[in-house]
Image 1 (cartoon, rainbow, N blue to C red):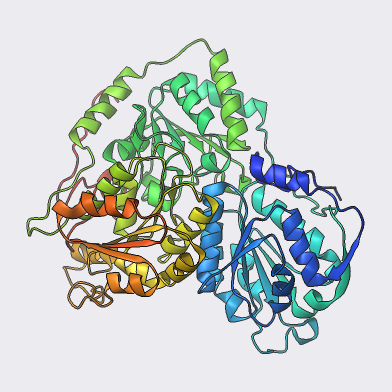
Image 2 (cartoon, rainbow, N blue to C red):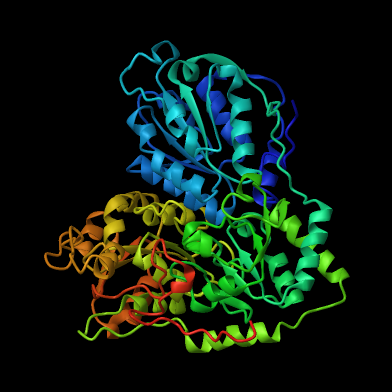
Length: 607
């Protein structure tokens, strides 16, 4: 049993949350209150600034003291929106996001965003109401075993049994969510516990036996990694989202420049290493760049930092990087060796791992030039750059739209993507120079993520431009949260890449199902149902439409000048554009296609 320090109650090295926790580190004397009052006071003591949620019967007692709280509550239109907003807030700020729902369907509507946050290691705390303790297990009205339902998709979850334990459990939930490998934690509180009388004191004593995340790596493993780096001829720094979570981007740049090793950043790590840096080969994987995919395949050493060898990067696992030794560093020991054997396993926080690797490599006076390696990679960069063909039918190219948004809005903005073709184009054609400027649903691939996540990001970073790049299919899943944005004064920009179809599914139907387009046409082109401009206006937003290349810049600039309301732009684009390069699911990365029917040719020389 331990007393929490300000650091243990905050996200790793996040100054804002550390300061908030420190300033509220103690309560002068116990305060008589209800369980609900204790809950709200705990949130205040933890430095929570905002919570996204919807009241309902079982959680209603908590909403009464929340009415007088300094915690800002944002009333969303669907609990899924609350969860994704909490995720977007957490990803943009590094703080713990908070969402609140009532029991039964309110809680189960949080399942998708909780699963999404779990897959992408995002620190959120979901607080749900539950039926009163005597009714649990009786199939009472709006009862659901949300603790059991979310057990596989939370880092931990709690069913609160007494009002007295609320401060401790809330403190533990935030500590668990933010430390080690971040993730979602659920706190389920029965209604009678919220109504019960108790006393509130702070800080509580944490009781988390056995929870001791390893932050500092073992020195022997660091030395062995440095030895392999010194001996390698074709090394690659394979960088995952864990580097962003650890705040290790400055160290990564220093390590890369010190060694001269090529860098690839996964979909979840975009912004961890500047896209413009000459050592950056781009994103690897299913829709990665040819040089990045080739580098992993032909490497003799993968220095893997905070990445998990997921199938979208590796392709067919048994053919992935066949000649490479693996240094795998991750704060979660369960990830190491899960998909690929690690020759040098390193358990530790990526920031500490990188700092100690820098010291170990610096102690080695030898520095490889990797001339032959870079010659091969630079040759591929010249021959297979990212690009696209202009549509022959005169329609607007979606890649052009996204590229122009990135160039006009700039690298200081936050870009949030839905899931599908537009997500991949946004990862390819917008240049990410800084951490926490690219938010997306990587592991779960959740359609409907973009609008509420952008809302949460804008709440967390009100002075930063936030653009959601969404698809017409994704947008129709959660666009009701634009009403929340309009009423709460959250001026996000939503660029709907409207190709009239479920684009990525249609691409697969084109390539693998002989063009049999079963149930992928949405009617947003043929019938203009819904009319996105009218829908935006109905939801209290400014609606714009762009259908020609000549108008793209003008419309983007018009949207940029509007800062007192949310803006939705219907970019009506061609339906036949495809995402390239592509490694088909279940195939080897060696089978990457640069474009349709165009396979890259590799010089199998001295490599």
